Length: 505
Image (cartoon, rainbow, N blue to C red; front, side, top):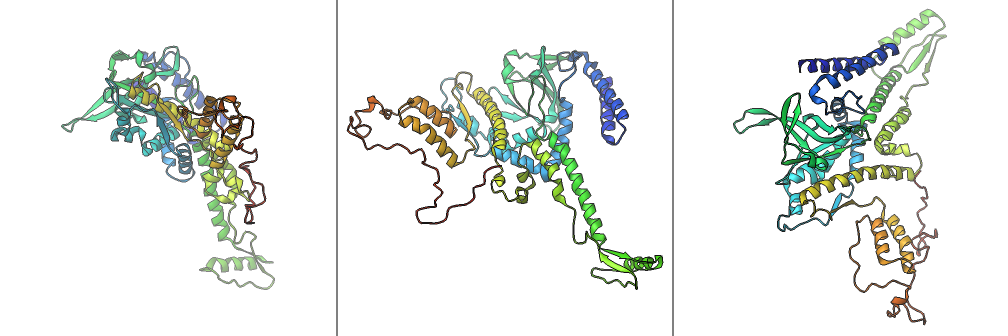
């Protein structure tokens, strides 16, 4: 393994050299990159005990490696404490978890060998590790900066534990598809009751491939222990077919954040320089110009006066009282916002970036909502896996997980009107109506139809005189197509209506 460490050190040196000076000649950069690729290939084949792992069979590794994730995570975590990177994380996290995640049909009574899943959800340990609002924020932070969130759960007690990225040291993959991870290798230091510490090394199989679990995994001729009584649950950010790991949400934003930060720092230097030179003194002779320079050089404090001889002039610089135009950096910051799938207005916390557009200031616009919905769907999938593991294979099949939709009240009302009109005309069944309405409300379903419900405008409903008067007319009403839409004439009292008619742009 000494050669392995040596190769890893060579890889680190080459990567550092590659990024040390971005002004280096392109030829030298190409040589370094070629050497870097060769070293990576050597490292992939160096340990013959890792044939079953990514890169061990000699094929080129696709996407980011585990070491890449750890290196980027350290940089992103540091930058995510301040400025645009912090704001970007807060925006994504609050957008995604707005209103919280909801569970339905959770088993709450233990019958036979069943599990009271609600008790496990409410358990303080599981709340801290997975189910609480703080756990949700930390989950999103891991996807934001690390690209991988990993938990392990005790199959007997159903207790969950977070596995930090720096404790993940290896993966076991499908022999025919290295992007499919069967198990994760975890290494950490355990403190014993006597205060002594011992190194720990364990493998955990993912819930999806638990049926492939073995008692040991052989690495480099050594059998390493598999925790057969535990199950791993993983979530990857921006995963791609063929890539073992995903890509941290903030990876592209981190790169452009450095450019924007440097631009702002240069702007501060320019502003300071502009503030230090306020007046221009001109002299017709060299001696006069030198005398003026001496006068300015010896002046102290603000608001001083200068004595200029005959024939000389003193005029204010065109930049006097001005500063660097920091609004020009908006386009660079917009690239950061694009990488994070958030609004540039919200990222800068500057309402002036919206110009005179009221609608543009509504930052949770359709593209942002759709991007956040993608991540919400991924959280739903993960929570379903965990809850069904807690309940057991059969007991958890009916569990439902969902988020409330982003639509505001007016939008929900209009959409409900659109599906209610066909119902009032009697052209759809109650099951279809409930299916459509549940989709609008963001619910899995509306439950069982109450007894006695009659379809409007249907011959089977004629026995109800408030529905149909047997051809003699009825007192029922039908929603007008314009219901819920403003007439633009103000209210009944004559008060002026809101004239803001700008839409999301």
